[in-house]
Image (tube, rainbow, N blue to C red; front, top):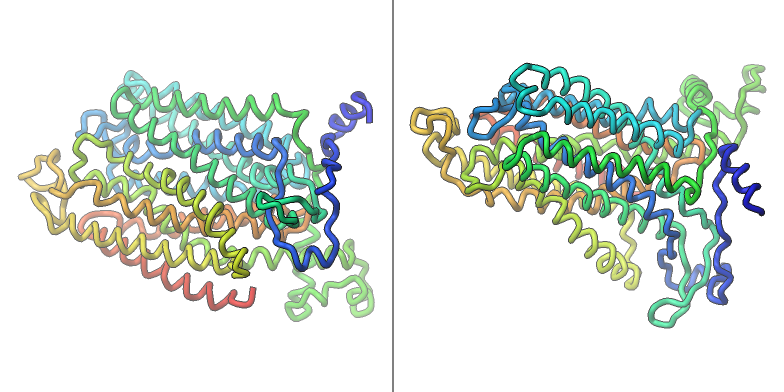
Length: 531
């Protein structure tokens, strides 16, 4: 294929030109016996996979760097002990923060219809990263002290956060499947492993590896919140928002400049109208997809339907992939408590000069460490010893670990309430004057974020890997969006719990979330034990 042909193909929206795989002697296709008998490993992945993952890393840097500032920005006034901008108070700030997170995580679902149906994942990234950058620029421009005094900061926050949410919705609907799209090999091949033995390169393990590294890079990006919280404290909110904008602009630049290197999957057209009609016929036929088969509809109802047996099979696979998302909303309730309420909890403790929203940055650091250990040590160890650690087992373990994190936070809150000077009403008694926190060191909060990170290592990549691998080609963005949207449902549930996000009820809040997560973990393990 000559250069002009490649350019024509790319312009038509077809898959970008892909260099042929190596024809080295150790890369021949594996036979059935070799697949059955030899050790399976992840394949070497092309550089474009990591380039696509870098877009996600830069986008997450911007998101976490911005969102980690919102609690203080909304809750406190400029003259408070911990400065802010809006002075909304703890309860209202938590509600607004959760509402933003809900919208960010629900928008991928409608966005995915547009992505799969018309735009395609690459073009969607071009458009939505631009919208995201515009929102970040508005937030920056209205966060200077002069704008806070004039009231412009509120208008800028509303407009900027809306654009950021829209941009994030489109990016999240596109970037996860786009990263996996960059690995196009479906044939199981033989290669010589590090120990000199012949091994089989497995697509399943490669996708698992890609998503583990993807989330590792996402958490590296989220370390940006360390820099932004320090800049917020020592320089001002505007400096932190400037850094976040630079990260988002980096994502925009990569998307546009790396265009020739990427694989561009062709949009398949929206399948939702057909899927909805098919499911309706299945429901009327006793909630069985067999009742929606073309031959059944023709014989039983003299009706010609616009789908075939293959579509029924794909829809069955999509429903199977979606089922595993059912347990996730409660997991995200816990994540919401860890992201928002924990910041206020840290503000009730002796920080010794540490910003109250900095401690939670230990979470991505712990994730980066645990991610390497689990991917490079635990999973290979289990495979070598023929121990099958299925996706359901990984997710169930993560759910149980998350319940432990919430229980530990309840204990920390109880310790705060038993400490002076204000006991169950920190910063609210006369002895405090609104400036002296309860006498508990903020580092007592550290294990919460470490435990949460361990839970995430088992849950996050596994959920994405499972939904991508089991989703039909025409529904990958939609299924990924459904998976992401469980976070929105979870944060909605978190908003329902927000009346408990005040003193002296915070022990109850943490205990309720711990109990909900534990029961969900048990139910999930029982419901999906055969998967």
